[in-house]
Length: 129
Image (cartoon, rainbow, N blue to C red):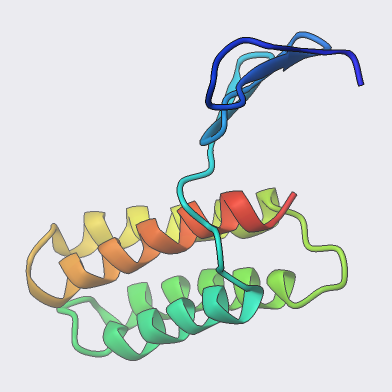
């Protein structure tokens, strides 16, 4: 491994990429890992199940709820594959979160759903590659 330790927290540079513990910078892309220690794919899927159950409580149109559910289902199905692709999990979750914010603002149950989705996205960035 062609790396050089640059601080006491384990950050290092390898092949022009910076691995800084909670962040990984590859070229111009920054991936924030957050704390995913002890989190399993089943824990991740459980968070998404919570999102789906909370969705009915939010003041969001049926059409928007259907689109949000479709995106979350895509992320769940991808996370269950033997080699899940992070981009095919984070992308639909980000789309779902943006639609919730756009459809309902950040009030009430929608706020809780956005918080859960942000947590799921952070977990996905640390769990999947």
